[in-house]
Image (cartoon, rainbow, N blue to C red):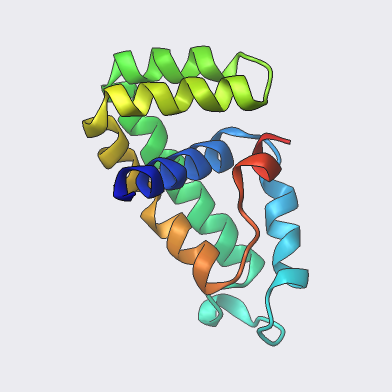
Length: 130
């Protein structure tokens, strides 16, 4: 059960980091957050902070993939497939066969996972893969 949850987190973070629809996620903050209007960075759910978190996770994920060419190639191949159950299945298979990569990427994605929970952002694999 733990491995499945970890894979879901990695898949969600990868999808959110890799899909160009991040702007939609940032715009969703205003409707998904019950926090009052944001003023500067004092609100972790402000669009600016969401954008920073997504950017930071994306940068770290890119750096990780650059330093792990086998994982980079496998995920590049998956991202070039049509979105849907088959591509998600390929990701799951890769991470089941490579638990270290799964764990590493789950750790990198943790700030995005925390933000999603804290700000009640609707980050799901189907939404991210569009």
